[in-house]
Amino acid sequence: MTRESKRSAELNFKHPSDGPWQRTYLTPIHFDIPPLDTEASDLARQRQNTLTKPAGSLGLLEDIACRMAAIQGTPRPQIGQQWVVVAAADHGVAAEGVSAYPAEVTAQMVANFLSGGAAVSVLARCADARLAIVDAGIAGDVPGDTSALRRMSLGKGTHNMARGPAMSPEQAEQAIVQGAELARELAGNGAKIIAIGEMGIANTTAASAITSVITVRPPGDVTGRGTGIDNSGLARKIGVIMRALTVNRPDRMDAMNVLASVGGFEIGLLAGVMLGAAEQRVAVVLDGFISTAAGLIAHGIDPRVLDYTFASHLSVEPGHALALSHMGLRTILDLEMRLGEGTGAVMGMQIIHNAVSLHNEMATFEEALVSQRDEGGA
Image (tube, rainbow, N blue to C red; front, side, top):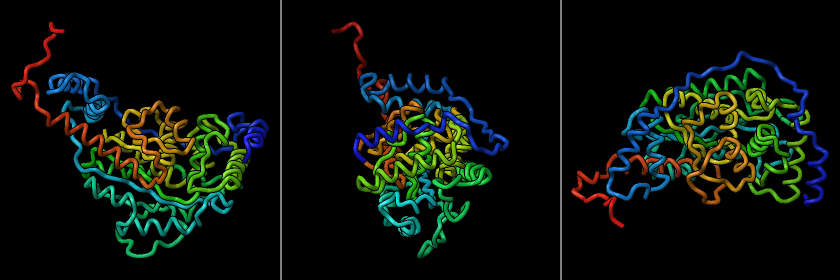
């Protein structure tokens, strides 16, 4: 798509935030998310200032450790067992030719996760983290041994959002509920931090649509090449998103309606994981664009979820930076990644682990018999 044709399409596109909206109301889902413990954070900061280093010399790592203290409600936070939740689902909009890969790749990649051959599998092993691979709505059969696959399917993929709602309001609600239940289960098993990732052919299309609606930006501003589509594919993808928003008219003030209109089963489930984790004082680490779109949904349901959310890295997908900016989140890393799966989230989680370990294990000036700063000196 040329710059001129893209601009023309955007000028002629009436954003769905202008209404009228098509939606079915459900009873709002409520989460009991506690406030951050500022006293624990202050005590953690005091400890940071006694460690054998110039105050502030570890930069963002010090802030991360203090924030983990506030999340857990203790000045000496712990990492515990690290978990990575990878939710997989198919998208009916794949039929519109928005991806460089066929839909059956979703099931095939899930098999790769389960056998330990995917990038996130390797990184999880490096981090000594446990993987929870979730079928949130895979259309095809997953080959090989699926005994470790968590079955939480909401259907054989979503409907084609370019022709109507991606899912029913009831399915959207169930996705949130099941994700929250999974987070509570992991917290009950000792999880203190959860990295989230996804797999689903065409899910960058859903993420772009969600981001366009909630940030009130034209689809062309938030839509990237995803799996590596060419220029004509990108133009088609933007056009499909415009059509989906025009057909469904999602209400950006109603996150559940946005999810049902143009979302994905895996996106809804990950939003639920975030909300359920926050209830349990468990930190969540976002991966890239799709998991951040889940963050937009979770934030729309309960803004307090961001107190418990870390953004791991900045994807090259153009909508990612806009979604992060909308939520006021700062990334830990910028490695020009766009793989998904939770790969960036695992790497971000390791930085958080390092920050907490430094906080707890470094000696204080008194313990190490090291002289502190001479405030009267030059």
